[in-house]
Structures are given as C-alpha cells and as structure tokens.
Image (cartoon, rainbow, N blue to C red):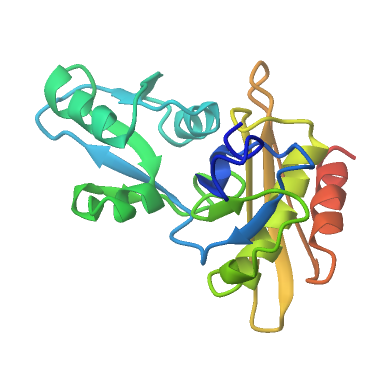
Length: 223
C-alpha cells in the first residue's frame, strides 16, 4: 500500500514470503544473491522430549516423514521470539527455521543441523531477498544488486508454485540451481496434507525460459 501511495520507492521482502500472484502494478525489480536456501534445526539440549515446533506446513510434513517419532507443533513470532520460546518454555526440544534468516541475524552459532534439500525441500525463493517497486519506474540504481542467477532460479521456483495454485503457506517446495554447463535444474515438491502423499520430481532445461520449466514440472509430477 505504501508503494501504491508513493510513500516509499521500493520495498524489500524475503522472497519466500511474497505471494506468487503479485499485483501487476508492483513487480519484483531486483533479486539479491542467494544465501543458504536450506532449512536448519535449533535444539534445546536441556529439554528431553520428542516435540519440535515450526510455523510452516511444508516443514511440518517433511519433518514428520524424516522424524516419525517427533510431534510437530505450531510456533509463531519472529526468529528471536521463536528462539526465546525454545529456550524458555521448556515444552519443545527443537525448532526449524530458514538457515538464511539465522545467518543474517548472526545466529549461525545456534544451528544444530542443516537439512539437505533432499531431506527437506526449501520454499520457493528461500534465501533470496526481493525488491518490489512500481511498474514503469526506472530502477536503474538497483542493477548493481540484482543477481541474474537468483532471478532465473526464482522465476522457475515461483512458476512451479503458481502452476499448483498454491500460496506461500502451502506445502510446496521448490529449489533450482544453474550448473556448470549453464543448465537450469529444478526440483519440486507438493504434499497432499490429507493423504500425506509426496509428489516430487525434477526437470532441467535451458535458462532462457525458466517459467516454462516451472510450469512443465508442475504438470509432470501429476501426470
């Protein structure tokens, strides 16, 4: 709303929390170089129980598969609030958060374990910061921070999510990278919350049309 009212020139978001269906008047105008896209576990070694906490359904369902002996409960608040609850409540033994957020807040020392994307597939856009601006304005001054590789990967991941008609809270994972041969590799995941069925697949292609790769992978995993 501040952008629409011309109160600010651009806004900065964690891309994973930004809707895949944006107002066309407010496009993404720059993508940061990607930080660690993976999820991390923080343990309270003083609490000896089988209760983990997460605010994300995507994480919850994957953690349940990875640790079938754990009970996953919901937790709210910003990173510092969640860590404080872990340290002081005495009710939970671990929380799962984005590694990039912990690193940006100089909390990397709290990480007990980093999950490989084969264990917990990241949210689309995780680890990338996005600048959102107004359509038609000249944002030449952001060219120096825009990372083309991040942009290409983000377009593929968000296209996959959009093709599934999913929001940022849906149990959808997607992670793309560009290899040494300049090929875009995308892995996508959709979890049926009721049946607990994991629909997962991979697709590679040329970097010139990342959104098509995202759409095609979404179609492929349900074919």
